[in-house]
Image (cartoon, rainbow, N blue to C red):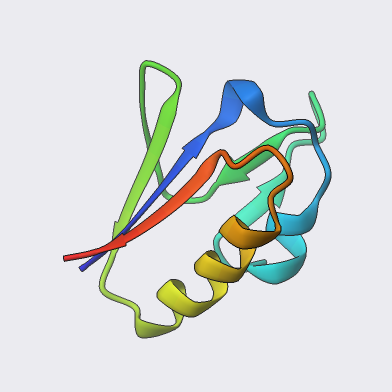
Length: 76
């Protein structure tokens, strides 16, 4: 199981996550911030759980590219 977490409130809208992992991240047309697809919001932390193998690699690249370090990827 791969768990991806996004602190959306701190997003600066750089678009790196959507470039590196377009199947998991989109940029909101409303406020220009990142949206973690199929995630659950809990007090500003948007969390997605998936068993897709490719999620780990692409989301990890997105997390490393994020200039404000608001994306975390964990494997269980």
